[in-house]
Image 1 (cartoon, rainbow, N blue to C red):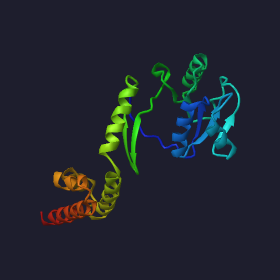
Image 2 (cartoon, helix red, strand yellow; image 1 turned 180 degrees about the vertical axis):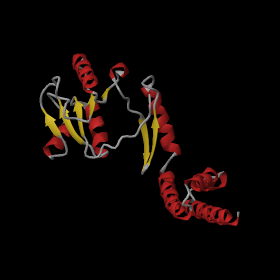
Image 3 (tube, helix red, strand yellow; image 1 turned 45 degrees about the vertical axis):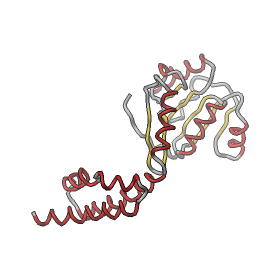
Image 4 (cartoon, rainbow, N blue to C red; image 1 turned 90 degrees about the horizontal axis):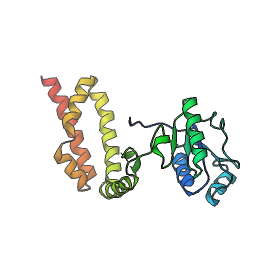
Length: 215
C-alpha cells in the first residue's frame, strides 16, 4: 500500500450502509469536511438526525450499480456481500477509490487507525492484516503522544515560518532542520516545557543563520 493523505474538504463522498460501522465512517468523513451521502434502506438514529439537520444526504434505498458515479470516494459498510462485491467492481471500473470495510481484497485503499492531536496525525496500518493490532497500537500511541505534541507542532510551524525568511535557500533550510530537533530540545517537549523548547529551537535558527554569514 502507498500511504497518502487526501484532502476531502467539499469533496462528495458516498457511504453505502446505514449501521453503526457506517456511522463511524460518516463521522470521520464529516470531521474532514467531506460532503457525505449515504445509501441504505435503514439508518441509525444518529445518521437520521444528521440527515434531518442537513449535515448529510440520506437516500433510503438499496445500492444499485451506477449510484457511485457522482462521488469522489466510496466507503462500503454493509453486511450484504453481494452489494459489497457489486460496489467494489463498479468503483474499479469507474476508476474510483473504494474501501469495503473488513474485506481487504475488495478495497483499492485501506483506512489506517489514527492518533490525532490537533494538526498532528499518526497513522497506523497493518495492510488489513490485523485491525485489532492497529487499535491496540493506537491506544498506546494516544497515551504517549498527548496534547504536548500538538502544541509543539505549533512552535515548530512558527520557527519554520521564520526559517523561510531567514534562509532563502532550500539547501540551507534542509541543513538547519537536519540538526534542529536535537535530543535536548525534544527532551524539553517530553517534559512539557514547550515554551523553553521553542525558545531553544528559535535560538538554533539564529545561530545557524549567523554561522552561514560567517563562512
